[in-house]
Image (cartoon, rainbow, N blue to C red):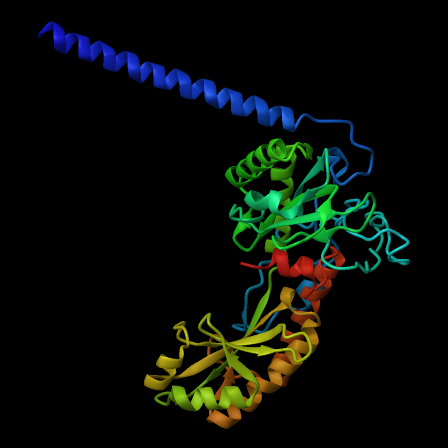
Length: 398
């Protein structure tokens, strides 16, 4: 080996070692800056950020109702009965985060009732942070800032829905911040959803959120306050378990007896006459007239998505009416409407209304399924997740 080759090898080794040392130094600098931004401070008792004050959301008191509402054998549903049901519901103080001040909303409570009590309805002045289901980071900028300064946060993609709220003056109601907002904000809060149907907030997602908050806080010269990361992960897991216990979808199948089938064009005509609209997700949706919220859906019994092209070219032997209990404001009423629509479609198509084992559903069986829907709705309400509410739509969204 020549002297030149030996020198090049040594220089390469020195370069690699230098890069490793430099990267480690840079990482320590970033960690110190974020740690400084999130330095804990004294939090008043009852604050939405006092993790030690929190009570994990649990479900209680619905065992008998769920047992009494067992569906008939083979009825299509997505009930996941909990194996153990602790007794306490949500009991997390809302403080000043989720409701307007008294002068703006006279009958809005400042906090949840005690764990054993019933939470009064909260009338907000618009979308508000929800400390029960969101990980929240508060920003106190040295000077009022415009929404454009939050560009990195407003466009962040962290794997869970992220919302930003701001106040234009101390103790004013929170308002949702968008990139085209013209106000200047004296206080901000970033809210990351703890759980949805994709699962609980992961450690990687939370780490990315806190890193983003720390870097943004340094950029806008703001004091940053956040809850304990480990406590937030535990809250996310508890909330995800609770939602899994409460996640119920009910299906009614309209099936054409063998060897019959329904042409796609015929099905689309009947569905649209019944008020359904073909949606991009490969299903038909029936919308509530006033709110345009989805009441129930119509899906291909074969599992294949409906598209304009497939409906023109193919046929199917049946469809499934699906009610997503948590996402409907009045689940029993929506079920009644869906049941009538399913019966009517079965008649119009010369088909049968059956369960997923292809057994006919009579009125007695349908009444039992309705009782199941009522029990599921009651269970949600007991833990302060009102069916169809913004909280329910967030927790039971994809």
